[in-house]
Length: 303
Length: 225
Image (cartoon, each protein chain N blue to C red):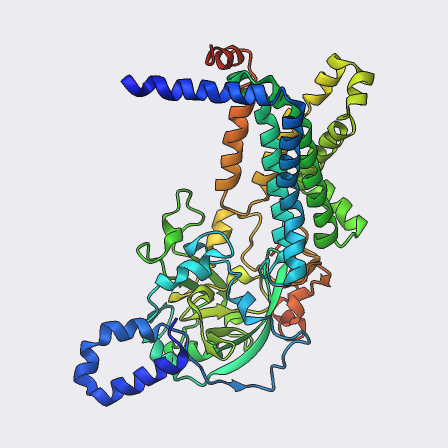
């Protein structure tokens, strides 16, 4: 990896050399631009951090579920380097007034916030991660959803030439990866479009350059490396639900009372703890903010 | 091919050397000590690593330890099952002297696997463990496999062979077949999506069990004639 200081010097140098020369070197520079760089963000007192301190960045960036780069937790950190994350555009379309292809650079100019969220995986482990991003509703405002927009589907990038897991002998999931939210879930202030973590841009294995973060749902609901966002009238079916309907429901809200058919969700292991001693909370502890979204709903039937 | 004769003869002479070595008590002892150390090391390695550096096993050391012990138990179980076909094929009866140690180490790894699950995953909360046992087929099947192997471990001593009589003992110890099938099914049902590894184990186990069929056994023996 290019040391940060060297990287910044090279940027300054390129600026001095002028646009003509810079464009000749564009190819080399575009690779360097995919490197992790510092990312400024404001803290928002309306979203206080959880009581547990953030997980060690080394753990959060080496223990990842990103099946497009292989099904082991360590594979993404090794393999994801090959993904080109600049330039990047996201197609925002469907039941909207102004469908658009939005350049990542435009999204990076939105006011960025740091939000420290609990992260609970469906596999009964958890982390605490300082994400950087903007609220999904800010992105929605750019395209103006119509009254027909009842759901949102997120689609991840699927490039076999850059993603080693996509040509596994036994296809693990139906690519490209998709998952969705109800429109009121998506528009909730906690729902974040993430572009960075730990004060830096996102590492590829964590879903660079743009991913979703819905802190009261299981981790797999958060599509990584998003290339398409669709506002839909009908409820979409996500990749995991398609793979195992009875195990991964549309809502997938964190809920200690609703077990995964093959394992209990009552407690979790706050990594890197040895013992799964932490009791899992309903809505991952965000009940005060989101429980009203599900008022009157049977959470066991709508798991 | 003219050269085809030499590998066969070298294999034969190697087999002869092995056969001869296993007839010397001193050599058997040395090999047993080496095998003991080789089997013990993977059992003490994970906690040792963790003691030196809490992050040495990655973000989820408990999962790492549980899976490691499970893998090692299954691999040792398959090695134990390999002894008989290998003995038939090579005609080296002395190989049998290592079978009990392999089997007992498989059971030791399995005990650590079960203990790590009970403690790390279920925090020794017995009603949660009971709920797991009755609700989750992969836990149920795994635990039945554990109980079968417990019977084998308890009856593994020479004294037990004598007490039970060779015929009864042999019949009891055929329980290793259902136990290893349960172990592979347990692994298969546990994985979330990618069944590559359980599939490899299933293929190996299939071959090892097939080698015991009355149709295959004589063929294995004939290969060395």
